[in-house]
Amino acid sequence: YLKVGRVDDARAIAEWVEEKIAEGDDSLRSYAAEMWTTLGEPDRALEWWQILHLAAPEIPYYATAEAAAHYGTCDPDEAIAILRKQIKSAPTAQAYELLAEINLAQGEYRKAAGIAKIGLKTAPSPGLHRYYAENSELAGLITTDSLASARALLASDPGHVQGSLLLA
Image (cartoon, rainbow, N blue to C red; front, side):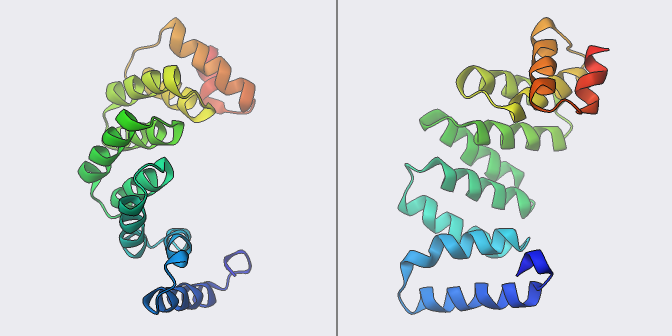
């Protein structure tokens, strides 16, 4: 529905899914969480992500999604706490990327670069190369490592402007 601009219909389906959950179909919880997230309503998604994360704490996706919902509801401190806990138990590129993004948004470029660098050692990804290269530049910490990340970024995204400028 969203692809064709039928937001009201998509919202109605998300509400229907919640009704089904209230009737006892717990298997739809992840659908409700994903639907509200996709609809851009992190406040509605947050409760579902919290339930899913509590029910299955061993699934990193639920922790990262809960953290993203907290961040989307303007609670970055809770998001950071969840991400740090998740990274200690099951590090993923997505968790490091979101943590770096939050630090970037807070103007903590040095922290964002450091988080991305640590993440690259554990769970390398194109996103972490981007966060490391870009935040290193913003923090004035351009090193051979950050330039290597810029090269890796350009290998996966040849048209990335900032990556190109870093290597110029």
